[in-house]
Image 1 (cartoon, one colour):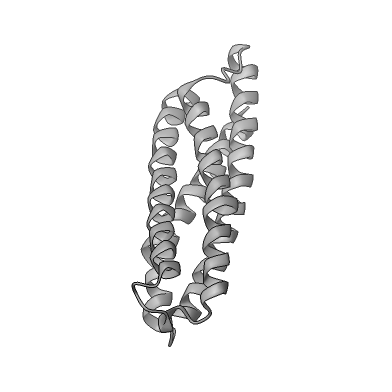
Image 2 (cartoon, rainbow, N blue to C red; image 1 turned 90 degrees about the vertical axis):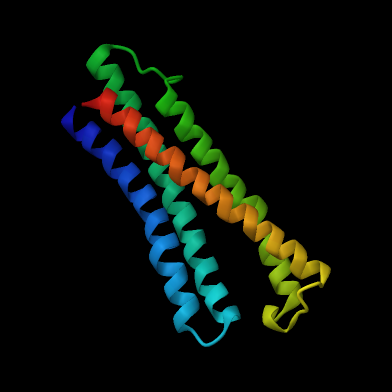
Length: 158
């Protein structure tokens, strides 16, 4: 049982730690070091895709480990507990960010070519910036939901 609790915490730590590292370290560093915003955008986009897949796997691991832990500990898995619901919301947002918003942003970026050469008032760039704003908000939402899951799980799983 201790292994299941460890696995649940580890998967959550990897996911929310990855989001924090991405936002606080990776993205700012890449945009300040690389010679063009286009190149930095490519690195950040690729990294965000990897982060989303890490999050999806981590989320499933957390769900399975915490449900099994609850079943073994109390005889009830509690699939509709607040921590499980928040985690499912995190998974849904991550799926939408990757395959909805992310896919639309990628198409726009490919359509524009060098984004730095596209006028700020170009409809494609305006739409890209709008989607980027939403992408950032959704990533922040996943992070804060993750902190909520961590708080609820630490109270429940300890």
